Image (cartoon, rainbow, N blue to C red; front, side, top):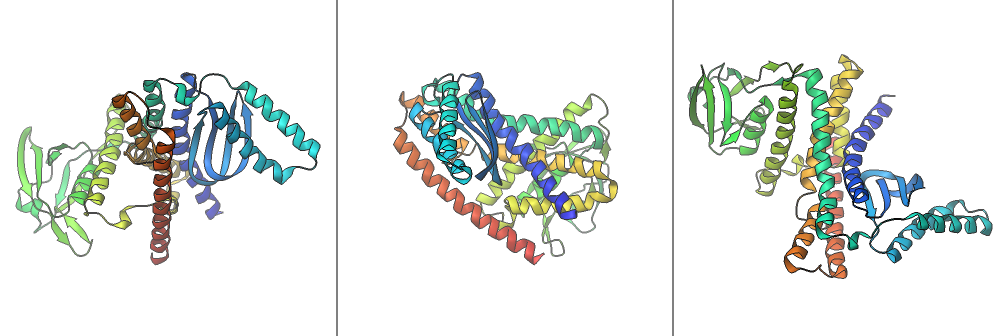
Length: 384
């Protein structure tokens, strides 16, 4: 039963972040009159699905992504529809009559398609369609943050205690000081102190803080702590509770999403610059393990607390997915945007066959990366 609950919670988080992303593409494409052939959640073999108004809505077996497939031309659309349905029909067809019935159904489905192909849409409309996925991730993340902070409140960046013999104490930081900036980056929440320190490692940290209404600045070089295995400023405690049962909910929901955005971005930079490690990256397996750990920790406090923690994880992952999809890499939204911007500069699109090759190579590399990350996730779980 415990395993089933963990699986259901994983699927809940997965559905929130993937559906919001693909729905962004879908709704903007539909609003722009672009034909959408398929709206899919998951990848791999089709589990269930139905067709309505020229679009197939499909649930697939592997919870590792999703897809919003546009019509890139009637011929391609026909191939896409028929290939997928043929694979499903082969498993269930009882007679040639059944196959004929399905062929007729497909013909009716194709007749339902209204609007234009994606490739026929104006450049700005196509840019809007591609951008919509990450943007909807950020919108849903904010809505989730509103729910979480309304019920749980938030935590500001006030120092509550310092460690003896560590840089924070030597720099004169004291309980009651409120950190406002770290290396020029604005700080609102306690969690941002941790993220800035973790991604900074041993480099100097310029700290701006308030004490008794006055502003001060100091520079701290974090000290390595053998027990925790990371660099510490020496803040033994920070963050005091802030209730958000009023209009401050909107401000603190923004702060929470901002924390997720800045934390993801800084972690990505740290990873690319060599200041991170492979253990800072997780795929679906690692995500499932993290959800299971959080569920176990929250379970004693009741199912509602568990659900709130799942919403918080979904908020963090939704922002994460939005940012990663904006990276200018082949096969993801950022790579598609790059080709569209080049098209705008050239005044004509890149030849589809050349763009297709680039995205195909990018997809293969991403698949290899996903396998490596999954392998590392499994090793980390076995070792824990």
